[in-house]
Image 1: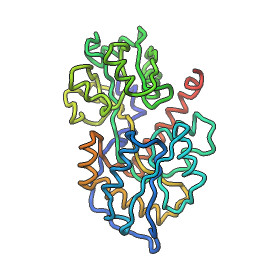
Image 2 (image 1 turned 180 degrees about the horizontal axis):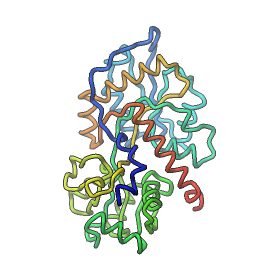
Image 3 (image 1 turned 180 degrees about the vertical axis):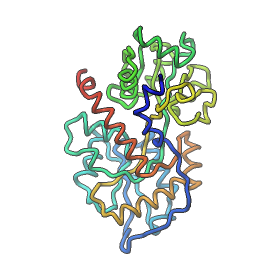
Image 4 (image 1 turned 90 degrees about the vertical axis):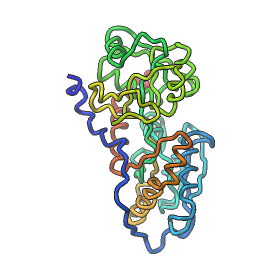
Length: 325
């Protein structure tokens, strides 16, 4: 029965696949690049997205892009709208400006009054998949995912999120919509406040990513019920996946990548894909990401586009509820 319920979301199976593959053949354009390549991070310095971009730039050094460097530039404001607008509407689509892409680009495009669409961007590579996990307080009466979900079909279950319309809120809403669950949301201003809610027992469950919650799970301050990934996470191997528990198709989570304007010339775009793919599977990048407790993993443009399309479809389905605050 569970398999039938979620059959239509099986396209997510590729979303968090790790592609290491054979060596990628170079097809460098004759006149590109002539200068350094800029990575626009549409968030302030110091956050996870900024950290990932700087790890990427450091791992690249001058060993790629014909000896040119990757320069990280933070362009925060408007919940990432300012940086995203710059790449979509101001920067020349010549390959010298790429953007750190997150689901915020999709959310902003569909839920806010902005001048761009998420379709104005073309994915280059996915490089930081971070699986979603459902966690409960350490003394929760729910000892399994089945117990929690069965309870939510008849009783109100209070779910903590890091904010209204956040990725975690959307995932919880999508699950409630598909399974007929009675979720009531407690929105916080940050993941840190969400963790406090979870540890303090002020919620029944919390939707987060593995990297955000693994520390308190290992310390016994909360309990994980299920990971939305194709396999168990090495940092919390005792937490089984949704799939292992009979919930097919539930592979989801935060997902950072790189994108460029859709009008970047095809020859240059292919070269960007090839070079960034090499960096993402390099030992320097993998080691630095692991050291920073972040998840490395290469996704092809096609795989990353599947993630984008699925996320956009879910937001469109939830849009009336999201706008009815």
